[in-house]
Amino acid sequence: MVEFLAVAVLSVAALLGVGQMAVWVWARGVAVSAAHEGARTAAESGRSIDDGVLRTRTLLHDGLGGSADGFRVEGAEEGSVIAVVAAGRAPVIVPFLPEFTVEARATARDEDELR
Image (tube, rainbow, N blue to C red):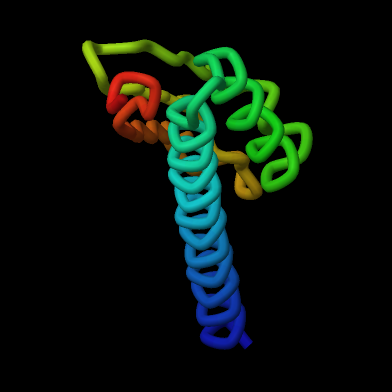
């Protein structure tokens, strides 16, 4: 009985750890995709950086739900390159594990500058 209990506790802890790691990877993927799409949107001809930031926020909210509210999204123009950064904390499903910070940065050439 004691051996079963020890193995069961360790197995559940391992499964929760794997589940939390999957959530971290998923949140990073959502943030990276949202930042890339935001940078591409802002780089389109006739679009502003604010359009890219709004697109990034929308995609973060679609992918992460309420957890996206904790993310900050910034856009900047560095010469002829548009940069979008999305940073925040990944959702936590296991409260005693450390929080994971996600930061995604994407750049795209500004089409308005290419003319």
